[in-house]
Every structure is written in structure tokens, then in C-alpha cells.
Length: 220
Image (cartoon, helix red, strand yellow):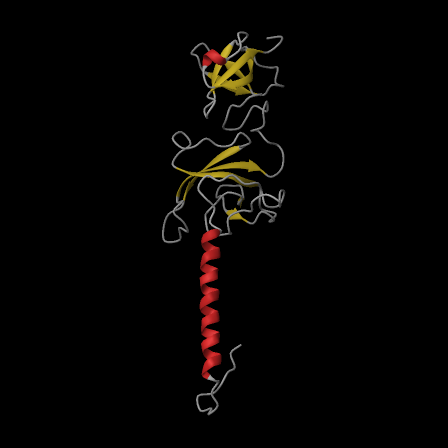
């Protein structure tokens, strides 16, 4: 668009053309600013991985929010944000929240593990500088799936063992090596009174239905 001219050139472009170019550049700059603002993902939004579910809402623009919803991470001593199509990508962000898991919103049931995020210094790219990311592996295994015996959450379909102190520990439903009685969480309700009469154990789940109604597994 710009024709180069030496300092001594006599020819000048007509003024109207220069005005039209300036206005067009200004409009493009405003449009770019609006697009950048619109692409920012809201706090705590849940999206699917961009590679496996292209029809769902896409990830936050790369580099705008560190490990924002839909972004992907590597794994190792120092976890980094990477493109989801990269061979280094191993997990995707299901949700991103401020604060701590104990005080903030619960992670989705499909969460395999939780990353505690702390981004400091002049390179911090957003206000989501400290918080946690709810992660799911891009490929199996998925310890957060019901009955797998892992993951940060206890959900319907999980199995637990109970101790005399009233504490429960999640265990794989297929594991038959434990000696402690095993229970399976059959449903989740808001209050204990809503559990079926056949309930053998109440399990704290969290969320909007914080009470798990568990029954003793057959053979235990």
C-alpha cells in the first residue's frame, strides 16, 4: 500500500488518498481491539479441547490467559502451556478459577488432576495470575472417571473404603485386594434425608449435591 519515495522526490500522493488510508487503518485498529476483547474467555468457563471437539467453543487465544479454558499443557517438573496440536500436549484445561480448590468453585466431574497456577513477574499476561486449573488428560488413562479410583473428586460411580475415624478413601471399584469394606456411591443429593433407605454410608462430595449415598459393594 505504501510506495517508497526518497526524501528529494517531488511527486506527492493526493491528499484524499492519504486521508482514506488513515481512516481505514484506524477502523482496522478499532476492529482488532474489539476482537481481542471479545475473545477473552470468562472466568471459570468450561470448554472442550480444541483438537478433539472443534464444534465446541474454542480455547482462549494462545498467550492471552495462562492455561485458560481449552488451552493445553505439557507435563514434567516445569509445566508449560503448549498448543493442543503439539506433540508435547498431554492435558487440556476444563476450567480455570481464582483462589484455591478448597475455597473456589468445584472442578468438573471429568477432572483427572488439578494444577495450582501462580504466574508472577512482569511477564504475567492476565489477571488470572494465581489460581487453579482443572485438567483432563488428552488420552487415557482418566483417573477422574467414575470407578477408576483416582482424580481429585469423588463422584457418583466411585468406590470408597471407610475407616473407623469416619474418613473415606477413594479406591478403584475393580480392586479386590483391600480388606476394608468397600462402598459404591450410587447417587448424589442435597441432604442426607434424601438418600434411599438402603444407604450404608454418607460421602461428602461437594458441589450443589454435596451428599453421596453409598451402598456396601457385594461380597464385602
